[in-house]
Amino acid sequence: MVLLSQLEVCRRLDYVFLPWKNAHGPISCGTYATRDESGQAYASGFRYLKRDIGNTMWWYKWYTAARAVALGYNVLAIDSDCLVLDDFYFRVKAPSPLARYNMFTQSEGKTLINSGWTYVQNAASNGPVAWMLYDMVHKLVRWAEDPSELFKMAPFAATNDVIWGDDQESMSDVLFSCINGRTSYYIIAYNIRDDEAAWSKLGVKNALEHLDRLQGMDYWKMETFPVSGELADLVCEHLPDVERCRREPATNFTAQTVELRMPHSGGVFPPEWGGYPFVKEAGPITLAYRQSFKDLGVPLPPDPEDPATEAAARATKSEHFVLMQSFVKTDGFRHPNPMGWVQNTWAAAG
Image 1: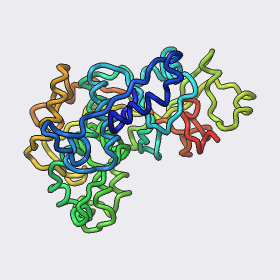
Image 2: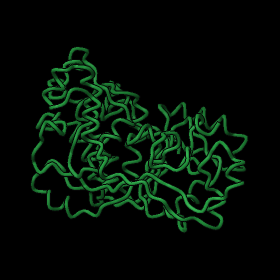
Image 3: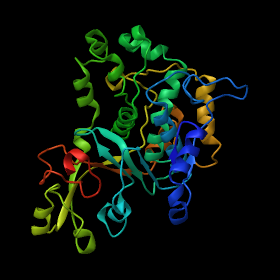
Image 4: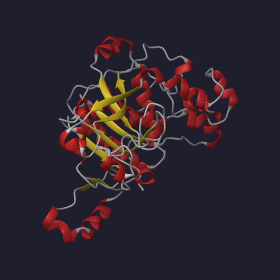
């Protein structure tokens, strides 16, 4: 399904693809209401964002994906600048060793996500992956409604009356929470910027030290998997050097993986984990966002801020994540483009 900003844009897209309708079926396209029941336009174009944060289409996309995953669907969520050239699913379904993993994303760095290509499979409605997708939008909803606590921590954001919220930074933020098994707030770095006084209150000198503390390097693994048969013919860790891959058929491949645990604060929000950048009482928009998930009628993840749910969070089954590296060079990878055969970037593929 294509998500667009207005119904009229959906109609125009349908018209563009009209010549292929009989062969491939009609375009499935959707959008969200941009006005309330009285006809008043939402400030951001999205009912759950009281003010603009980033690109509203990101939050359409991830709100839709979060609800779909909560309902038990496997979801491939990609940006409009991504192109599908072959059967991606064959690469991550049995008998592929990747079949046991629940979430895959592109990489933006050593541990950072580029969410332009994201796939979720076999994730529990009340598990860590479902929580990640829910909370990566939830925190922006909260800040859009009342950013006062964030602004106390981030004078730069307060002075400019702007909240930085990019979908891939927000997804990296919740990833780190699940890696460490407790709530943390990496994304505040983009709001604090270079304010040394603000960083000193969090016990670090700058954003890089904040990232180093949260990214959970001790938990990441570089795993090598054997591969054979038809799948082996697809594995190519030397892209764009296809000829080399043909000369040296693959017998294994390497992936960067990490276990995801349901995070919980234990009711404590120390500054070294990012403190507590939210107002304590949720406003009506935030409550409406939460209710939209409760209305799905499925078990939902424990509230990681409620001390009463800590035991339930600790008992939640862990899930598994693959960061699909295609251009970051580290000692853990034997070849320069380890996951290019699963998904790739134009810069690495040529």
